[in-house]
Amino acid sequence: MGAGKNSKAVVVALAGVAAGVVSTFAQLLLWLVSGTDPLALLLRDSRLTAALVMGESVLPPPAAFDPMVMLVATVIHFLLSVVYAAMLLPLRRSNLELSQLIGAGFGAALYAVNLHGFTLLFPWFAAARGGITLTAHLVFGMTVMLVYWYCASRDRSGVPTA
Image (cartoon, one colour):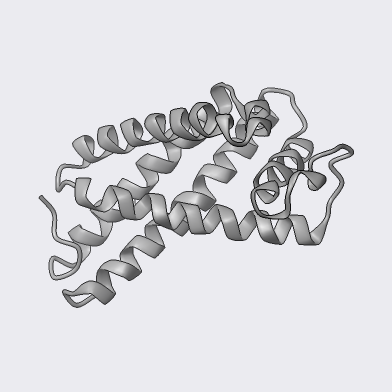
């Protein structure tokens, strides 16, 4: 990756998408291990997210699979993942341990804002609060920082580190 805005945008997009995927799989795995139905919760959370654009009419149970709800929720999820990854870019560090701590802190703050702050506007998100969702947010922030660290360590002309 050459130095410049385009390479930074690519790294941010890569970090956001990777973190969105990894944190979702972590959440699914934790739901499974906890004995809850991961598919039911994935469908519920997809409806919660899609309701941001589609309105509250998509919220009522049953949370059956709906391709349009899943598409809208997926687009929102990855757009926000890239935006949040961009917010972390200035905080990247060359030290992996410090990067992971910063990422975890960002994930915790993101959880607080998303699941406690935004519920003032979108009260239906309160249903997604809990330790597993918090852990998924921690994984998100740490994954973003891991991608930044990896990209910087592979190509010093790419995303510079502080």
